[in-house]
Length: 345
Image 1 (spheres, one colour):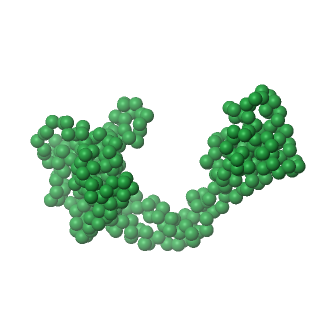
Image 2: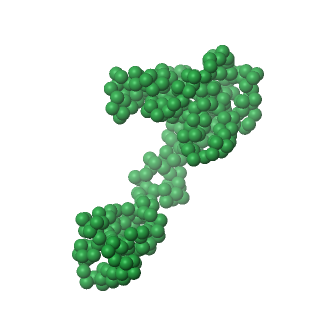
Image 3: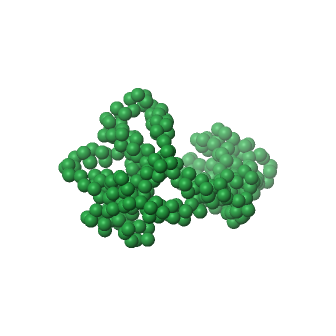
């Protein structure tokens, strides 16, 4: 898990004024700060390391609200071992950004302006609102800066070269192997008749529903006429001639999806028992699943291939940055630093 992502997401949740982490931190006793690690001419302080640990725990809790405390603790212990290395990597990337003369202040300002607009906060008052909710605007900007710098450095140094060198044969091979990723699912436009239990015993409702199905399948009456004649007056679809909408199988309830997936256009289901009555469904229009044209998805394929190849390339890039850098871990924290191979530097 990347520390920039952790701090970035944590700061955003705080900006939204729903997190209580900042007040909690403010209540902790002040401690003398100390250097945990030196990264070239920069340092990682104990205060920043503690804050990152807390942000990591907060994110794990937010992403796993139903896990018991012992499972939360287990996830935290599994992730925290990578934290110091990840913070060091972020420092190295920030230093690389400075070396490449990358600036992101305009992006930060635009992000903050857009955030204020989306949350109906006058931009001139945004920093005051943040302070009122326990957020340091400078810290929030620092988190955004770290994220944007990382993205721009890695796009330029790692992912950009990969993307620019992907060939069309590679794209076509990926397209054929993963055609399901580029296939639009079948779409079913459905109508219904609903025979309610209200005012009649379930057995009578079932008998009527089977009679309606027989009429619908015989073609003796069109479906909208049957809706008007038989569907429950309280059913919302009745006002729209039984029309439910256009759905994919994944958007339907499991029991309905299993039935509808076997139908053709114009087919009518058997009565489907519901808690309050019987539902009869008709497939008005069936648009079959269809693969998108290769040319229309070339860009998406290139991105997917870039991501796949980029994982190994990113690992090598970070290893090179570490190898070329001066990294010194304070004695008290050496056991908390490990490379991706599991060994400290």
